[in-house]
Amino acid sequence: MNDRSENAAVRGFAEDRMAAEAARNEAEQFRRFAEEAREVRDHHREALETIRQERERLRETAETARIASEDARIAAETARTASEEARVATEAARHAVVDAVRATADAMNASLEQMHAVEEMRRTLREIRDLNKLDSN
Image 1 (tube, one colour):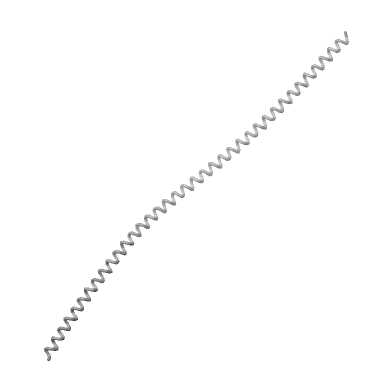
Image 2 (cartoon, rainbow, N blue to C red):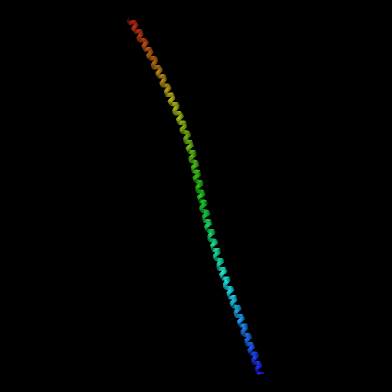
């Protein structure tokens, strides 16, 4: 009977050892799964951070583009205003030229009238001289 008890004890011990080995193997497998899960989580965290940084860069780029667009709009408005002012100045200069041409034409007409008057006075003077010559003869 002793052999049987011993065999039963040895079998019980062997079964306990096998159960303990199976539990260790299962625990090791769970540890590996947990490590893989941590690695996946860390990878996802890094990917999310990369996406966040890219989103921030895109936001900054969009803001830079908006500022450049606003600067371009202001420059276009300034150019439009300058163009309008140049148009007004050109129109004023055109009117000034027209007025100067009219003034010159008026001055020339006045000079022409004065020349006619001087010529008329010379004729009259010649006629008077001719009459005086005839009277003295």
